Structures are given as C-alpha cells and as structure tokens.
Length: 420
Ligand code: 7TS
Image 1 (cartoon, rainbow, N blue to C red):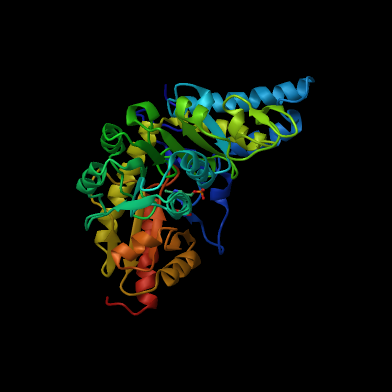
Image 2: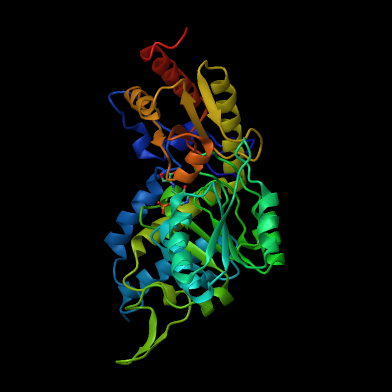
C-alpha cells in the first residue's frame, strides 16, 4: 500500500512529507532551515505532536490502577503502543518490550540487572571501539564491580569492524556477552549483527544490540538478527523525547532481577519481602511516561506507513549523493566506509578548521549539523581525532539539503581563506 508521502513508484515524496513536520518550515537565523542532525534527535510529524496533546485532552489518567473509564482507556492506549513497537521489531511477544526513557536507560538496565546477576570473576564482555558512551560506561561500571573484563573489537581504516578479533576473544570460553551497535552514530558503519550474533551464540555468549541508530532507519527484526537484547530511543524515530524501548528475550528477562523497585513492578509486598509482577511490569517501576509511549506508537504507525525498507532505500540514495558531492569539495575529509554498509551519517572535516567552527558557520547559513566527539571518545582516539563535523539524514531530507550543505562548506572554506 502506498502512503500519501510516496510517489507512484514507491519513493518517498520528500516535498510532501516535509509538510508533515511543522518545525521544518521554521526559519533559523532568518534563513530556511536545513536540519541535518537527526542522529542526535529527529523532528516530529504533526501526527505525533497531536497525539501527545490529544492524550492529555482525552485520555490522561494513571494506568493499571483505576477501574474507571479514563484509566482503562489510558492503559489500553499504553498497551497498544507496546504492541506496535513489538510488531515493528518482530518481537515474539509485546511482553518482551520494556518501555524505558531512551537507549541509555535500556543499556543500563541490561548491564545492571543482567550483569550483576550473571557476570563473575574472569568473565568477559566484548564491545567495539565504535560504541557510543552509553554502551561502554555501564559495562565499565559493572565489570569492575563483578571482577569481569572488557574486550574491544577494533576497526579497519574505513571504520569496519575487524571481526577476526571477535573469533579470537570467543576462543577463551569466558565471553558472556557481546554488545555491538548496529549502526555507528559517528561513522555510519552498519555492522553485520546477524553474523556476530551467530558467532556469539556458538560460543555460549549473549548478543546485545544498540539499535539507537538502526531501528529508526531500516527494517530491524530481532529474531532474524539473533538479538537477545536490543535498545532504542523513540526521540530518534519521530517519537517523543522520554520514550524508548528495551527488547529482551522473555526467558532472559524473566530470570533477571528488577532494575528499579517501587510501585507497579510488584506482585506482593510485605515488610521484609516482595515478589515481582510479570513482564513487562517487572521492569517498569513507577508511573510510566504513558503519553510519550502513545506518541511513539503513532511515530511507529507513521514510519510503517512509509515503510522501513523505503526509508532505508531513501537514505542510501541520499548518503551516496552526499558522499559523491562532498568528495568534489576541496579540503574536505570524509570518514567512514564507502559502500552499502553505510547508514545516513556523514562525518567530515574541512582542512584543519575546528569542527565547532565548521558547525557555527553552517549554523549561520541555516544548516544544523553536530560537531564534537559524538559521545564516542574512544572511537575519536582510535581515529586520531578529537572531533568531527557530522551531517545525519532522515526521511525528510533530500538532495537539496545536501546541496545546501555543500554551499555552506564552500562558505567555511572562504571564511578560513582555504584555496580557491
Ligand atoms: N547509542 C547510539 C548508537 C547513539 O547514537 C546514541 C545517541 C545513544 C546510544 C544514546 O541515545 P539516548 O537517546 O539514550 O541519548 N546518539 C547521539 C548522537 O549521535 N548525537 O546525540 C546523541
């Protein structure tokens, strides 16, 4: 079925789709805005913004508590949102999808709850140098506490993982978990998760996937990937800030101790003992961000109508165009792999201009990009850099946005007196 934002050939009609995003018509510094920072947070379509207001206007009440109509409606809306995210990632059951605030909280939940219960002296957790800080620091804390060790898979010069290193690490027999981002937020590398998961499982280790940069941009099927855990953020996929999901295989989540304790996650409480509610409530202590979850459900509807495969195809074409265009600009250095294992993220430098200066000048031209270490300091160190400028694309970006970026970079070159 084609959506109103698709051309008859099934491509995304970006001119039409942009109209769904009110903020994209807001000028910045008096100029038309070109938003190229969706890897940090995406913009939201009117359908999501309206869903939030609508929830508070018509449905707001705490869930699982009241027998009155509003509470039942609110609970049903929350459950429906869970069904939608479970469907999006092909979870075997919605109970395997825990609502959290963001990817960071999902990853911390796994490290704290699973890690504390399962890691022991001499055990190993394998990560990669591509990881965002939120898939490194929680593992530093828990491995230190448990006397376990961290290992890191390195990258080659283009930013692809050296998978052979994983084979070497797995030979020890001590690896309990392999944690890998499906897409690097700094280089755009798409990692071969299914292959990595197969290797991890053959060695008796679990597979944790950071889906922050993949779930918003491509079809992700947890069962086909062999993911035991997968965390992602609603705010990077057209949904509200404060919404996110941790997927975990049911038998793993069932066996894990609670992460946070309090209301809504218990079955019974006595003064000195308590027992836990079934999934997913066991991991959802306290009043949930119900409206945000509902908004995420609407974002999932929006993305599903366009199609995740179409979204991926669209970004593949833009990134190809962006790399080809930027390669023509003198003084530009591009980072990351060239090929189809590349998501809609382009990290770059211009001569030896500091990335923050690049971003400031682009901002003056109405172009929003991120500059810095992208919360991937170990990766920057590995690349011998302190920072890059980064443009990241989504379904509301098109070739015009890339052309504006190229014009903006020409301005950067002029301001810094780089050659003609
Ligand atoms: N993992 C990856 C791969 C990410 O890109 C990010 C956020 C996170 C985890 C954390 O997500 P959060 O929603 O919990 O904050 N990445 C970025 C970025 O690239 N620029 O700003 C945030």
